[in-house]
Length: 589
Ligand SMILES: Cc1cc2nc3c(=O)[nH]c(=O)nc-3n(C[C@H](O)[C@H](O)[C@H](O)COP(=O)(O)OP(=O)(O)OC[C@H]3O[C@@H](n4cnc5c(N)ncnc54)[C@H](O)[C@@H]3O)c2cc1C
Ligand SMILES: NC(=O)c1ccc[n+]([C@@H]2O[C@H](COP(=O)([O-])OP(=O)(O)OC[C@H]3O[C@@H](n4cnc5c(N)ncnc54)[C@H](OP(=O)(O)O)[C@@H]3O)[C@@H](O)[C@H]2O)c1
Image 1 (tube, protein in one colour):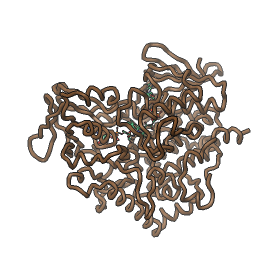
Image 2: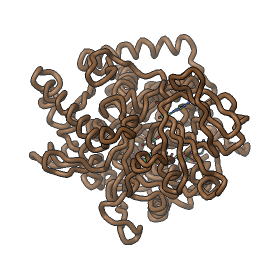
Image 3: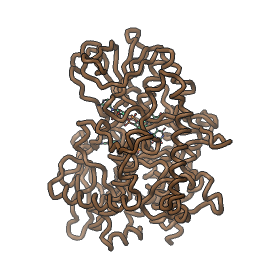
């Protein structure tokens, strides 16, 4: 029997192992991963030549293993390349002695919960694809949200007779697609960051591109420069959202541990404050439009997102290409179609325009940049249990649906009583006051049946937690901008959770609030980023900081780590949270 089994050797699973071993160097920990190499999204097999992080050097590394510029061949101010991320994560695993604990090529199929026998421990049976079964006492699921490709179901796909690949396979199929003299025109489907990447990769390697962004969906998302002017200052966008001043502009229906609750109350509950917050988001929108230059050229206009960046979460990205991607649009090499796909035929995609007959576009290959499926990569057995523990499912019973339905209503009441605008959702256009609630296109039919992740604090299965079973935790069923900071905190929270040392959780349990808190977090995520990943899992950008505060408060650690006015205007970075594991360990002694 393994004590702690971690599924996933991406940044989250590795950080979990490091955290647990830091606390107890003798801990019995095994990590398993379906991939051949380490790193998850940054594993060798998933790297394509132009892949870079949205983040800049020194914003994506862990607090206790700084990315050394010389060692990893990167310069300050540059975006970290996929290659560098892979090398960095590999080095992280070696440095913390984790590599030998990882079993690669090991895909989990099904997981079964075993009730304790004779006052023994709960345990988990982990069924591997090869038929083997592993047994563990504690289970960490860190399988990422971007593992299971969502392939669009298009009529006539079998008649296309040319490569049709998902963006997640670009790493393994770049050579075949981009260095093949027979492939001259590439179709790209999708309007988010992977689509930008595929368009750039194809165009910069000399291909013509037909870029299709479906009309019935959310439309193009915000892919913005890394830096923006804030008054006279050039600011780094990813550091703007880790400033308290900015996070206070975001609605937050949970307790505020920033020390500036009074300012948040002013900004959201007084007429003058509301005006200030509204103006602020208006400025963010105007600044993003200016930076992205959509209105500078008639060819770019089609790329202008429908809504204020406020609503998009991380279904967005940064222009990390080192050259101007729009030049390929103005030169005509990239032709953008805001149209739904009708069907495929031999080397042709047919798109529905306003004309009666769908318009045929000749193609030699298609890259579907259509995001990731809400279907988990592993199943919990039986299916009703999967729903019970908050994992996306299609098998809710009537009583289970009714149970969460009434909790969702209560959660919406709590959110709506404070932030009615959030419940309304985005308006039809920036000048309209008619709500355009969550766009049906954003959940394709194939995705619609899956329930959202429902986890206490975005990590713990509510049913098991409420019953006192702390043997399962999920890390990173979540998205944000400063992910490494969040991952480090979630891993520490998971350690405390396994040990049942979270006082706030104990209180919520006594008050029978575990389920309501879970519903509140899920509903908030959904309303906050309807144009992002919010309907499936928490997708926090301007509200990362109050979430971190929530976790730190649970851990009884200091939330205000800067002091004075720095607290309000200086960005939080990983260095502000360096040493959290030791801090927590010494505090509880
Ligand atoms: C192309 C791309 C670029 C991105 N760029 C950025 C960026 O610039 N900045 C940023 O912060 N975030 C970025 N992200 C988000 C990214 O997913 C996270 O930052 C980070 O990689 C998540 O780490 P993780 O460990 O949680 O998940 P992952 O990196 O996805 O790792 C999960 C691991 O679990 C394994 N696994 C899954 N299911 C099973 C199973 N059933 N059995 C066994 N193993 C399994 C997978 O093989 C994988 O190795 C990007 C995502 C994509 C797709
Ligand atoms: N570091 C990097 O450079 C980098 C690169 C790639 C990705 N990422 C990150 O990875 C995450 C995922 O990005 P992603 O672009 O892969 O996915 P995504 O943000 O989920 O976007 C998926 C896109 O596909 C469209 N789509 C879905 N189903 C479709 C269908 N059936 N037909 C046509 N279009 C369909 C969606 O449009 P609808 O609105 O119509 O549903 C949307 O435009 C993001 O958080 C992103 O920031 C980062």
